[in-house]
Image 1 (tube, rainbow, N blue to C red):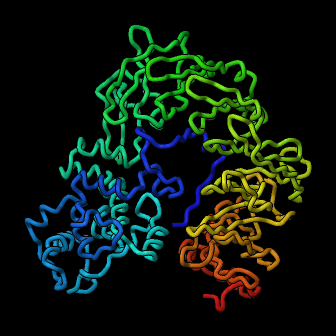
Image 2 (cartoon, rainbow, N blue to C red):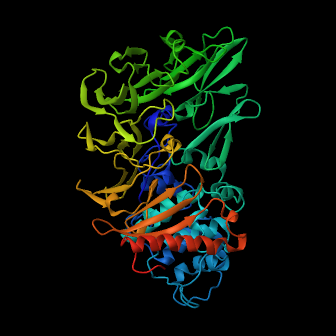
Length: 627
């Protein structure tokens, strides 16, 4: 599975992501991509979850997750997932296939009768054939959306594209563990009845909401909100549970803390109380604790700690944070005054981020010129003066990655916490990169050598490409990086540009993202080569890279930002190096109806695509013939 993740910056830190524990789903894989976002990716846990609901049994050897399975075994697995095993065995529906073993016949018959499975021919099911990821996804998609959906509906019918994962699994071998994972994903996917499969199975009495409640908490991300009557509710895989306690005000964000409780407030006899609640049952746990609020003050959730502590922001009636409070499970104490600094900053904001055993709190102004940071360890607060006026772009367990722009230079540093020892430092003078003036000052346009994004542990931007290796930040490429694609084997494709490029685009383009004109390739062992050089004269303004899967080495796109937003061309690099080969995959215009009648649009766009392909062919950069 080839994955890309966009973007990091401070927004990612604002999400207060802290290592998983009770309220949070365990065994998350941050590199697994959006398909598995905040989901337990451990196959054993997934199999245990399905088994607990009666949807998966395994074999005489246990779950046997590391072996492939036949189409007959897949039929059994799917019927059990849908809760129809008893019905299939009782009815033993007929089917036209002559190659199905007796033990699998009721299951295949049920699937065939309900239009969820077809054979490899009129009389053969392919019972002993090894099932592929694509075939299992077709089975599941029919189960979700009905028997009449096209076989390729799973390409786009699920919440995110499964195509890259399917192709990877069918190349390496589709195993029972993969079928378990797809089955778990299906439970959280919307069906044709506009409810998740989990909700539909509860409605069909396959299992109860109570049976689903606790096991699901360790597999799927739960969303906590307010329900009618000021009650807290939890939604997991489309199944909603509501607390029996009323009169509460949920502290949003506490459901993402790394411990087993949520927080809410409640008014009792004119006193505001802090009420811990169990993440699973939504029952109150322990005794409510009085909060020191007066004159319209409120509290907002900041961050949680692994030892069951919580940081709260005490705010004035106008929303300005006054103090940082710490709740240790029994008492609330004030640990830091915030208002004196907050009142001196322009459009300030705060960021909580996890560290090894604590939390880093940073407050900075909108422009990032002024910032202050503290290390929070329980009720102990340590001011980190060495981070003053620095912009953190990632926080690691024992260090922080920061950048600071002063004049026409950016300094990137990795600084150990709490000692302040500088582990790595890079001084990056800004370069006079673009021939048009700065859109704000009207002066010369400088390329800011900063990190503005992260993809699978690689930090990139105008500063180049960086990664932490052996605990220390390393520079892998000192050229500006305009986009990055990370492949499964650890290789990279990097979009970059030559200094002074482009010479003809307006200043508004630079305010979005700098376009590129060269693509570099880095092998899994760290060897760089030029995949597509600007010297070839391809004359393509490249704005994005994308995964070409089996269609080619890498895909890249041009998208218009300025005069005709929405116009785009997609290309695939078929051969890289000194003699690159490029195929024009597709071409789109935002308003083709202004050029030709509506009925002629498909032909018109295809003609434009063929003309671009012919241009590349004439340059010796295309393919043998225009298709």
